[in-house]
Length: 518
Image (cartoon, rainbow, N blue to C red; front, side):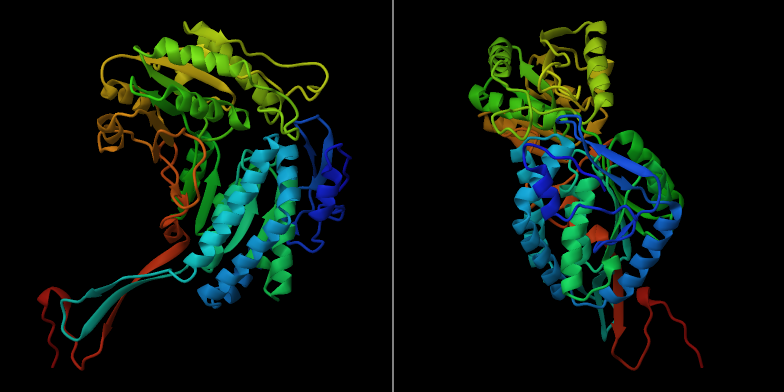
């Protein structure tokens, strides 16, 4: 791989993470299968080439599958608490490499440096969670209707878990899946986004050290780099019982159909069109903080980014003025400079999508409150920097019904009670994250009730963005229904088995059925 130097220490970060020459395309201490065409990674920060790697071919993929399936036969026999120890060591390695990996995430993806560090911290947190969970992979014991019988449920490792991750969280989502899959006894094959391949190599180098130090099979963690064609190989492969895919709703529907066709399991984390409801009893200061970070954090490229602000007519002007005033304070620029609030979009295709959305909302009758636009000149040479924009809109607008992966916030006015606001909030295809800003207990409880938010995440007096790993993460409807990270999300990585033991000398049948033989 070839690298370029950055004034922000990227060269040093790459060196620490072992992301260096892999021109031969084979592993250099990591289980990375790649002998195909060159894949170049350009930073949206400055437009410079960070490095070039080789993509994985179909033959490379086959080698990865064989390596993973062989490793599973060994790894599944290791007691879960011992697998937890492996994950604990991985977490320690992440602590040692937090600064370097966080910097690479920021530079290759374009999110702020603090968010880059925060993403690595998510990886550390899920490792800690998984370590404790490794001693709690519980089943159930129940009473049998037949005398002298015992019934119970248990969970077994599933096998190879295929992970397809998106560019916006290039390392954390992989860790959410792998930390849990590993303590469950599964092995993993990871296809990171082709827009952030170096982050994948860095992570693989870190876990490879742990695997080598513990004399474990390398196939426990396999990496393949490439485009959607690799994803197609994974989704159609019966040797992968579970596919975990993060990305757009369009992509998720393709994955779901392919996996379902072979009766496999899929864990889908797809698009979000997240709203914050602002009631007359909202704390305006808190609302502004939650809404602005939710809308412009990661340049609007989070699946939990705030897309819609649904504001009661009685406080509409007050909230609108406060939000517009806050946007005037935003600093846009190099995300490795911690004085900046907003970094670049991932690439120029994303910029085109952003510009098209602003044109569309005006075409449909909306009004631009805070002008958008593409930034040019010194510091913006990559062509990926845009201004966060705000528009007055109707919930029924076609553009509002779709997720625009960019910093575009729609202000929508509602009247009447909170049920009217909920109709707007729930009146989109996606169902990931939601929030309400109110000091009214009845409104808050209504929002959280069975007739309230239809999203997988529903928050009161915090924004839509910034989930903790302790809770299950995911959403409903077009978001795919999957759950990752905390709570009992571990169960999807295992196969469930019901056991009945007869410790008598007779064989009674269930439901009182008689089947006597002489």
